[in-house]
Amino acid sequence: MSWHIVQEFENKIANFFGSSYAVATDCCTHAIELCLRLQTSTQQISCPQHTYISVPMTFIKLGLNWTFNKSNWTDYYFIENTNIIDAAALWQKGSYVKDSLMCISFQFQKPLSLGRGGMILCSDKTQYNQLKKMSYDGRNITSNIPWADQNITTIGYHYYMTPETAHEGINKIDQGVKDNSWSYKNYPNLSKMKVFLPWTNGVK
Picture 1 (cartoon, rainbow, N blue to C red):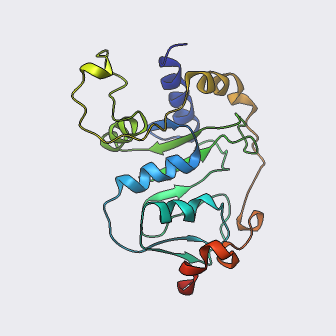
Picture 2 (cartoon, helix red, strand yellow):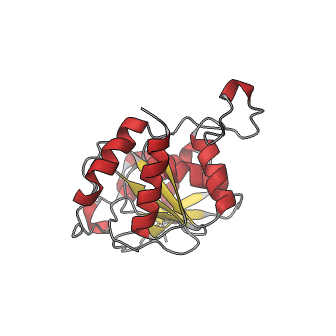
Picture 3 (cartoon, one colour):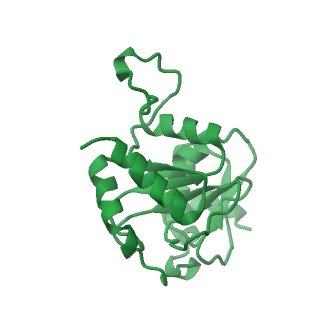
């Protein structure tokens, strides 16, 4: 199956949400990770204490300066001091937030259920090109040049979406559940979990 099917799925998702570009990934957690790797700020960041466990674990993995906050969010939230949005369960036409890096999930419980997969919505072409390379092991996937003949200039992370998943997404895109609002109430308080105790002293 052709890799062009992934581009087709990206275009359909971008059109649905109203973003200029979309970068398909193998999961939403890795979408968030790629966006964090793209950021160069050294400011302290934070996420809600009620969110999915992989978000703060990604902060720890990347060695970031971070803490929890007490945001009572609905549908999506910003990772504080970034333009990155965790919108894992959002499925609303035209809901892209301008100039953000908005991360969507296609995990089996999400509105568009593909079992696994994610997407980064963005408006900046430079960021799109960089994130695309990062998700594909640094390769320029849109080039007709075999990767072994490319002069790779970007560190990549093998977080790409397979054509098979993209094909399923195209076939099921009209089945996305519209009335499926998620909020902080869907998640436990992570700041109470033992694994995060070393980082919970600064909960805002």
